Image (cartoon, rainbow, N blue to C red; front, side, top):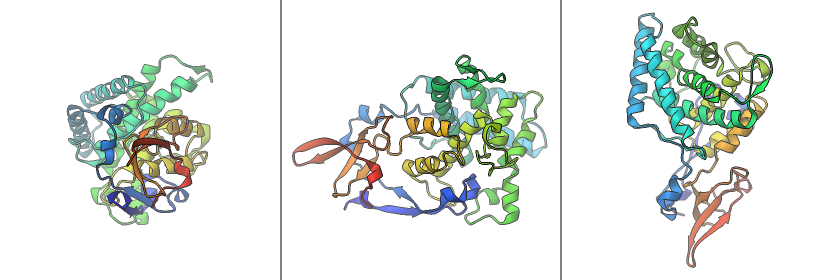
Amino acid sequence: MAEAAKTGVLAWSQADREGLPDALAAGDVHAEHRNGRRALLRPAQRDRRHPARVDLDLAERVRNALDSARAAFGSSQRLPPATLQDLSGIVDRIASNIMDNPDAAVVLNDLAAADQYTHRHSVNVTALGLLLARAQFRRNGWVDYRGQRRYDRLDQRLSTLGLGLLLHDIGKMAVPAPVLNKPGPLDAGEWELMRTHPEAGVALLGTSTMSPLVTTVIRDHHERMDGSGYPRGVEGEDIHMFARLAAVADVYDAITSARPYKEAAPPHAGVRVIADGEGTAFDPEVVGTFRRVVFPYPVGTELALPDGRVGVVARVDPAEPDVPIVRLAGPGGREEIAVDTRSGLAP
């Protein structure tokens, strides 16, 4: 078959590095290769359900803000107020772009100007986390400290959550680069060092001027519903909803992003890990929202069918994300068929 049939086997060098339970990382993940059959889709059809792209100016602002944070950490100081203000402005820009695209399904792309993983990951997790939160809060509302479900003040909630998402990994500045980028498994000492980054992030920011909801995201985004996470090992309702949203966004982007020690996995691999972790690692309600927002085979994805034909995903119904409409080109012209990806695709 053509290049579409090629796959590359990806194995995580250490699943726990991104906070994944071993059971979720068992098995191989395949990286997809595309060969230009997106021409089957007109440009308007390819772009219609893509999320807002973060522009280069915004990426540069993220880089500068995080560089300022790194300098503060290096001198044992807290994050400067001016940097926090700029980060809040970045969150407002991302949130505004998301709110302007109410039907966006997620296909997160690398940012050309943000050449370090931490920069890209921070922005990607913010964008995805805000997309999830917007859908979650509009559908199910949010529960206040009195236990009452509310649907108001969504913009304020998203702004606070977004700042926590953008800063969620800031504590990794305390982890030496050789450990962060190590191509092989971490040893016990390195792993213990890696597990300190949530609390290191909270210490860097301080708590006197920072919303406790922001620090909750930074501290608890590696906590898991069954208590298997870190740093505190809390579970279930003891994990704030903001942190539960952050956990899903963080793991999905970690899986689908390239790192020095692994290739980027395709969207369906990330979706599978999140779905497999429902109720154990991740909040079932958040996973349900995620499945309506993030498609395993987004519009524009090339699929090789069991009969040898190769097509491109033209449409996806959020109610049936595993059964995309695939456009095929044949002797009789173009045709569209529903493909149940759960039944298996060509290797």
